[in-house]
Image 1 (cartoon, one colour):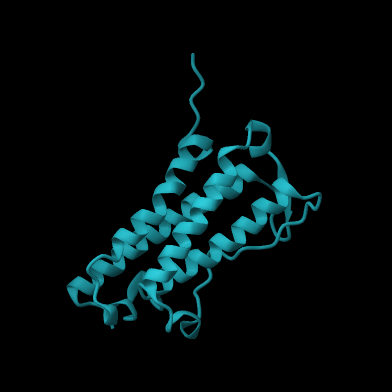
Image 2: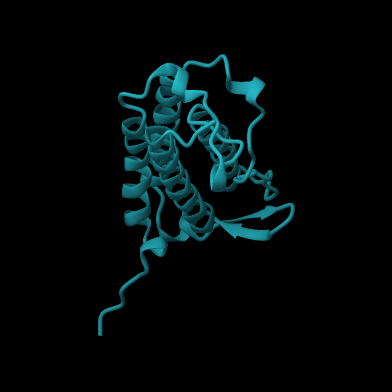
Length: 169
């Protein structure tokens, strides 16, 4: 019997998914009028607007890059906490250009993927010490980043649908 990994445990799958996420997020923004990007929605995504998503994923990407760099390239084992659930303050992103945010996210995501392409199986199991969660492997961090991407891609879809239905504030 051949061993088959779960999708979230296969580095090749995760790298492919990470590589596609930035383009998928950019695609979510096509044709959305600028004024609609700042409109908040109610329901499950209350407090969020489309413009907050690229700002948030960009901040997460920067933090995860630091975590991975610490684990893979330094002797220090402590990694910083990255808040994947943080709702950004409106004043932090409201003046930002969504295209610039998406372009920077796309660029940083490529850097993240490139840094992971060349690591071997042993490196995927290297660990850092998270301040709240204890030991975390590179694979676990990347799996969480993949899941985080999915959550925000679905969120963008829900917000676009709410805007189209006129149920946004």
